Image (cartoon, rainbow, N blue to C red; front, side, top):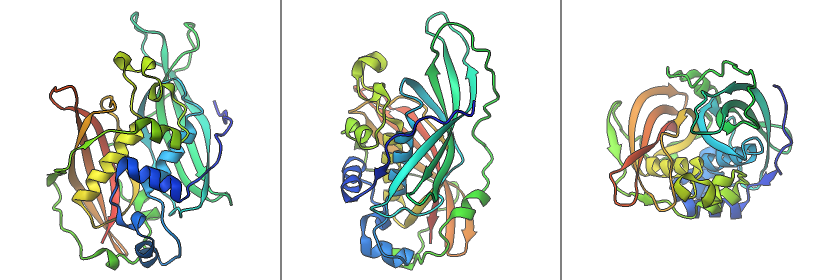
Length: 313
């Protein structure tokens, strides 16, 4: 408890890293694609890193704690505290906040839950991300650990105030075009289904050290498990295609990986507006984004329940 693990190498997110990520996920988020647009919207020089890529790098760096991960159960308190520019260097530290044994079963080795605190900073020590995630990992031995910490969970009740605190309300959103209407409660589906490809490339790009994402013999049924952030990246791409007026994603209210994803799966994205909150320069919209995967000719199965908070005009 309280142990801070040795950090992963710092990563500079340059044009190459941004281009590789774009090739894998194809996110049409306009502010992160066009430097002139980014400068017009943010009022500062330089290209902007896609917020999903910032999060992916932080998660990858945090795998110093979860190399033999079984699954990631939830994320909590995910907020992008400031905009990251292309060329910046990020470092993530990981601290153990809680441990709890999982229920024992005779058909599997002992497993447990670990609550991890992540802090991602720039070269000046400025905080970029500060969030928690809960991972399911294997125990070192069969001996009981005696750890039964209350790890909490993801808050079901949406509260906009933590996201409004970090939203870039100084941005000028008028270059993004007129406000796009999407009534609360309405669900829309991205007609462009997408195939999961290049999964190991994203794992390597983000320095993700979890072996099931690289070695098929360690995955379920002898299939290499796709890194969960890859699914989130494709989900964000689908959401932005449905809502091209999105300026940025300021955080995640919830993120639940409801099923495994494998390379070659065909993903479909459906999004619903849950709520809307006015800020100085526009709106924060809370979405529920549900992703289903079709594989091997079978009916689609749910694989992601993601609740992003989006800034828009």
